[in-house]
Length: 265
Length: 180
Image (cartoon, rainbow over the protein chains, first blue to last red):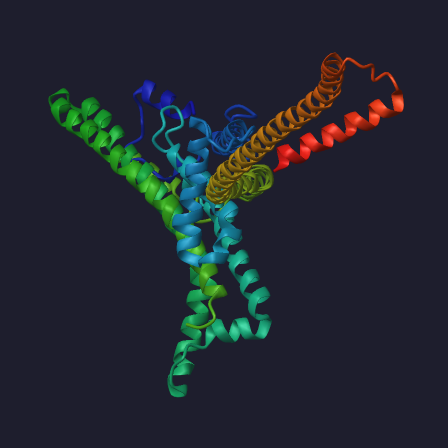
């Protein structure tokens, strides 16, 4: 939270920004390198968890048939994920998964949002550890649900053998296995991570680039201004990416569960 | 150029695609806490509220339908009662008319009877009067006749037996003359 401000104030930001800019010194012990237990990233995750818990418990402490404004807001979030993701993707039995999907959606959306909220200004999801956890949960969840629904053998037969002529199967089965059981969790995690990583990197490039040009030559000041205007524009783009990626992550998880529950291809 | 090299050299320090295991631990615990609280205390209650809302709306419709049915039933009942009351009223009117006619006939009969009775009583009284008068007249006529006869004859007809016989004979004669 304080690293970037210090860097900017000192006017000695390294340009171009590198991967190292994503590895901030620890908060506790203060300034220690490679002490990841209590950093800005873990703190932000805890803040996100705390904010979501407090928000939902506070708005839903005394639910009423005729909702208050806050209760309506909380219900709209849940209702959106429940009806527009769970039920739309999975169908009637999707209601069962709505609580998890809503939790997932809210968590990803809020942690993503930290990328453009002042003083946070970086998303925890730009460290692959957090998207990886969520992807592994989705992976375990859809496989578990598929196995429980179809039985072990039938689930893998169902997942691996597409309805195709026998002579093409030797080609298709490895592709299906690879895409379903290896690519899915990996792509889920990397998609979110890479979007957040790249988004932050872009903002760094244009923000620090402005300073770099200003420091290099005073005549470049107008270009610096252009660079910072680009930062604003990219922040708006980032806002879109934040919502979109939270939605995509949830929808893909739902679609994997739908695939595991489906009776045929 | 120098810091470019430095940056490139720094890349070997961190590989962004390798997760930091401490963050995996922290993230797992934090997300588990979030899931536990929200999935146990918040979203099931939202489902309950949704269900309650559906019930309330459906219940409201059902209640309205029940009220409508009850109102219709009451209306039918009132109509039936009204019709019944009308026939009752007509019946009561007819009864009253019949009663009035009966009473009129009764009074008429009684009056007729009374007048007959009064007329009869008058007739009886007249007859009795007549009989009394006849009886009195007979006695008086006898006395007068005797007195008259004794004055004319100049003899006393004091003799009881003779007098009685004579008077009776006279009266009988008188009556038979009157009857003729």
